[in-house]
Length: 162
Image 1 (tube, rainbow, N blue to C red):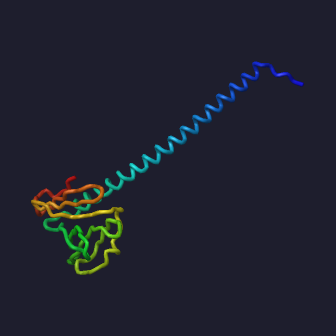
Image 2: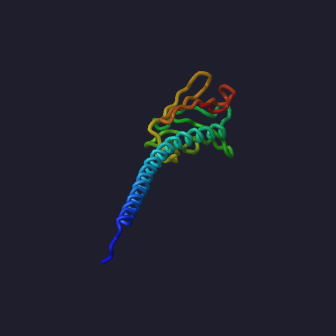
Image 3: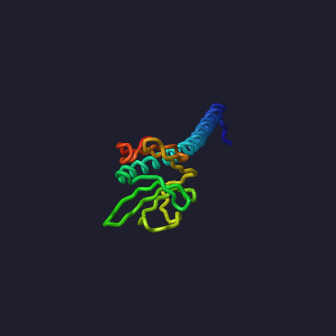
């Protein structure tokens, strides 16, 4: 029979305790980092939608801002922001509207009557409203916030303001 000294037992117990404390620390760090990652992911998703919408509207206005070519219209009973343009002598329009939980964009000839479901989904949203403000400004409201658009033909500014 092998005799174990009292000092060896204490060393073994001490090493096991340190290992258990280390294992518990690793588990706690993993649990907390998972919660932090989930919270950061949710926060970045909200900011992503807002930033994407603002960038989309800014570039849409900047690229299509010609005198009298940006206005509010009714598209199959839905409020729509319209951008008129001409290509090769034909009239076209881009419509931005809310349909089926998505802000959508549709590019088509002005003379066509199409279904709102045919628009390309841009970003998921719950609300989208348009208001004509003073001095020709157009106020776009969504669940991400609001945006003021100043079409070139109305006030001379021709830019979107947050």
